[in-house]
Each structure stands twice: as C-alpha cells, then as structure tokens.
Amino acid sequence: MSIGATSSATSVATLLHSETVEDDEIADTKQELEQGLLAQPAFISPKYFYDALGSVLFEAICFLPEYYLTRTETSIFKCHQNEIAHCIQPGSTLIDLGAGNCAKAAQLFPVIGPAHYVPIDISIEHLTDAVCQLQQRFPHIKMTALDRDLSQPWTLPAHIEKSRRVFFYPGSSIGNFHPEVALAFLKQIRTLCANNGGLLIGIDLIKEHTILNSAYNDSLGVTAAFNLNVLNHVNRKLGSNFNLDQWRHFAWFNESQSRVEMYLEARTDLDICWPGNRRNFVKGERIHTENSYKYSLPSFLNLLESVGFGATTYWTDEHTWYAVIYAKVA
Ligand code: AVI
Image 1 (cartoon, rainbow, N blue to C red):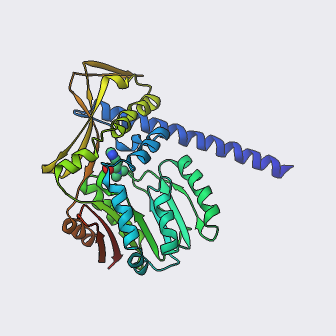
Image 2: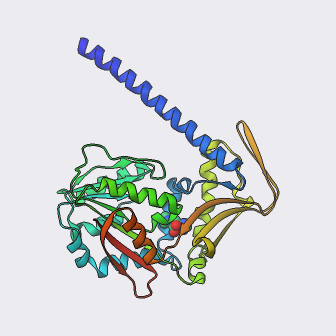
C-alpha cells in the first residue's frame, strides 16, 4: 500500500515535470519562430520542414529525376560497399544522424554489420515506427532510438558504448548548416568518436549551376510543396495565418556563397498575424527557409582534417557530383 502511494506520488511528480518540460519546449519553439519572422530579412529554420507531411514530401524529393543527390549517393554506396566494409569493421556502434526512415543505414547493415544501431532524429514518431520494423528484420542488432535536435547542442546518453562509434551522416545534410556551424558539428562528432571511431558522411559537390538549380526547382513542383508546407507547420506551432496560395517557392544557386538558397516569396502585400504579434510583407518580399551548401572535395577534406580526423578515404560518382567520405580518428 505504502509502495503504491509512493509510486503514484512519484508518477504525479514525473507527469508534472514532463508537462513543464513540454510547456518550455512549446514556448521556445514559438519564440524561435517569432524571432525569425520578425527578423530583417525574415527566416524560418529548415528543421520546420519536417512535420509528418514534410517528411513524406522529402522522401518524394529523393525520387525526383532532378534531385540527383540521393540516387548518386546510393550508387556510390553500392559500387564501393566492399571498400566501405573494409574501413568499418563489423561490431561497431553505428550512430545515424538525422536517420528519418532509417532506410539508408538499413541498406548498409549487411555490409558493415553493426552490433548496436543508434538512430537519431528530431521526429521521434517517424523514427520509432521505422525502428520497430527494422528490429524485426535485424533482430541480432541492438537498437536505441534517440530524439535530438541536431541544430542545437546535443549529447549521447552514457550507456552508448564509447568505443568503436561510427557516425553516419548521409544525404549531404551537413550542407544545411552554415560552414561555421558545420565545423562545430564535426568537432563535436570528432570528440564523441573517442580514439577508435570514425565518420561516414555524404557531401554534395560544387557543379554546373543549371544542374543545381533544377535539383531545387523540379518540374513536378514537389520541392515547392515541401517549401510551402513549412507555413502549415508554422501556423500550427505559432497560431499564425499564413495562406499558402499567397506565397511562391524560389530557389537559386548563390555562387559567391557556394550554396543553394531557398525562399518563400510573397505574391502580394500581406499582413501576417499570430497571437501577440504581426508582420507586414510587401509583394516580392522573401522568407529565407534553407541554405544547402555545396563543397569542393579538397575543402571538405581540409575541414575534416582541421577537426582532428586523420586518414580519409573517399569515393565519388563518374561525374564527380557527389562524394562519400570515411574519416577515421587521427
Ligand atoms: C536534407 N537536405 C540535405 C536537403 C538538401 O538538399 O539540402 C533538403 C532539401 N531541400 C530541398 N530539397 C531537398
């Protein structure tokens, strides 16, 4: 009886604590969105692309003929799987950063044979479903799903093995960080690798501008839908009154910054309101939603070296549009 009383008191305390944490998270999100919308020029963090619909739209983008990144990376993994397996010995802890539906890592399981798989993503619902299915296909691999916002400082729980950690960061997601943030991110991974780990990473390379521009302006308009959908997500989080019909998708390769920039452009003068605030946009004014940096292979290898990765092995496709790199701790 007294045990019951104690545990129910504990569970009420736990519930109240988690409700407070949730309230804090909601307040932080609102503050972050409001700050971006009131900034000059306005911006929305690309992490808000990935609500349930946004995650599905991104999966569709990966199948588009113009979006060469995914299929090129997949073909590099396929062509060079033996060499990749040679770099990553079996029995490692594979930490999948921004795992999504876990499909990319799952393709590598038979090749690199991890002992422990640790997928990390901002959207835990999406991740938990994927991990449950994966666990049935690979019952011998221990799996631990973690929710983390990789655009904020993050850590790994103490129970994740320190030795032989292999971080997996495919899809050129590093390109969505400003280079200074990318550097800090790589430094953190280097620290978490301890002394016998590594990083398997995919990066999109600088190439002809027409190819880059069409990858982010596909003819079916899926990237436009992905970009516009962020406004639905913002409306739900902030209580704002964005109407998607009043905005258009805009993306271009900014050569001087070596990045594809995505924006939402107001089709007309607009008054956007949300509880406690508002902002006017004039026709043609833009909200910046994403940067996708493109690197040269030497500059990215230098970056890896500068944060303390030693031997790097890399593989590219026949056009040198994309690179997969395995960087070992020095
Ligand atoms: C997730 N990330 C690497 C994609 C990219 O290419 O920057 C997101 C994306 N944005 C538009 N299309 C795809």
